[in-house]
Each structure stands twice: as C-alpha cells, then as structure tokens.
Length: 71
Image (cartoon, rainbow, N blue to C red; front, side, top):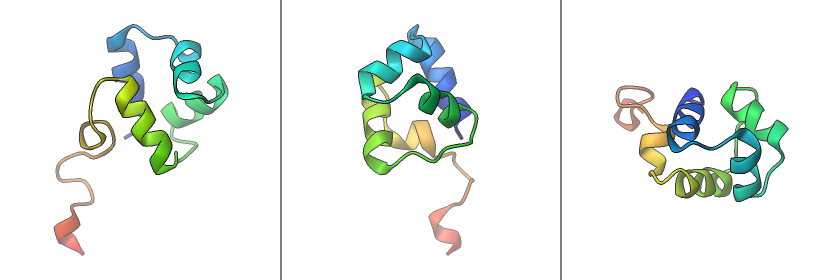
C-alpha cells in the first residue's frame, strides 16, 4: 500500500521533504509511511492524495485487497 505513496511522489517529482512540507508533516513521518511503519490518519491520507493529485482509492486501496464485500 504505502509504496504507492512513494511511487506517486516520485511520479510528481517531489522530494520527501517537499511533499512532507506541503502536507504539514515531518520528512521522517513521510518516510515511515512510505516504508509501512506508520499508518496515517484519514485526514493525512486525504492531504496526501490531494497533494499527489489522485484520490484515496487509487493511493491507498488496491482492487482485490481487503475487499469490503468480504466482511
């Protein structure tokens, strides 16, 4: 999941520092998100998706992964 944050960040040409500044977090926090060591809040997920010009589903949810219909 979190590697998509890194993929989109690199696709948009942002450094970790510049994206972190844009969404209001420390660069280290962004690094932990990208490495799967930190689960961001919904608010932070929304800010990341907006900054990366994508939507929450694309950035954080993969088709076939934890499908809501499986509950």
